[in-house]
Amino acid sequence: MEGLGLNTGFWKNRSVFVTGHTGFKGGWLSLWLARLGAKVHGYALEPPTSPSFFNEVQLQGYLAASTIGDIRDLASVSKAMREAKPSVVFHLAAQPLVRASYASPVDAFATNVLGTVNVLESARRTEEVQAIVNVTTDKCYENKEWLWPYRETDGLGGYDPYSSSKACAEIATAAYRKSFLAEAGIHIATARAGNVIGGGDWARDRLIPDFFRALDRGETLRVRSPSAVRPWQHTLEPLSGYLMLAERLISDGAAFAEAWNFGPDESDTKTVGWIAEYLCKKVSARWEQIQILHSHEASLLRLDSSKAKSKLGWAPRWSLRVSLDKTVDWHQAWKEKQLMIEKSINQIDAYYTSATP
Image (cartoon, rainbow, N blue to C red; front, side, top):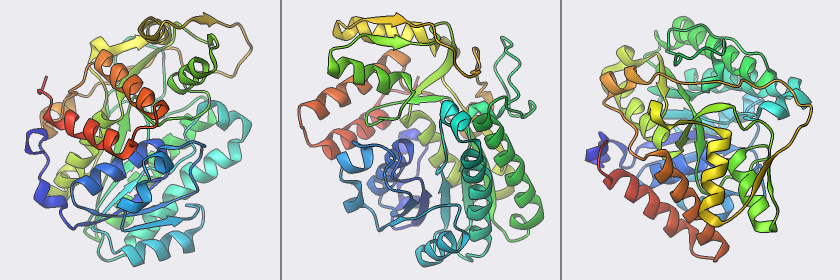
């Protein structure tokens, strides 16, 4: 762990509150925290898919508490947080899909904006809280479809309801930081990651889960926008950054209470078509482009993570090819009915023992 810049002793027996623990990314974070010895208190809706990472690794058995609740319910969030008495809060619960936000924009804004406000309000009412990492998205930037990677100082925006709601969550976080949290001694940072991949993601309208669904059914993968460019990364990459950031919020406070990008190296920012071709060659599958009318989605998005590299000492450890191989390996193990908690822990261990780039 120390090679990652993580202090194992810091997390041992520390109470941590994680929203969205039943989701893909929140599940991996909760498992990693439990592996570090933290007392993890999860708060989320029921798993959003079936199957789900939460159920397949039987994550509930590794948590101090798992509360099924809605972040749009302030009283419920506050009660769960008071009972957990956490020193660190990771906020990941969200409506995370662009296309779903077009279908239900009110739900996207209510969850991603008001839900975030409820978590922050609950935190300032809980005296044990010292640090908050609010996970937003790389899509919170006003996307101008330019070639340059976005930096933390670039303007916020959002064409679609999902992106806009996350930009609003960033603004709400800044308001709470200045108006309430700083004077209460609570240090809060926002974290903006790229398109995460990894084992245990069964969400709809995501390339990797769509690939596995097609593969398992013996069908051809259908791709909407093969030329779209995204900052792909294994989910363990930004999660390691969130953990490092939380430690620094506790130890150094206000100096780290700001926005942070956690994206892949420039060489791993690839097109959707590149990903589809790599995966299909790996398992002898097929893909094809489909022409359909669909809602607006950005075609070009890159992140500049130089700030996290220079100030946090964070850096990507797995190349995109390794990340895709690990994702396929996890899925194949699941199909073979292996013990997925062991598989997942082994991948976490392999990540932090891998050579630093």
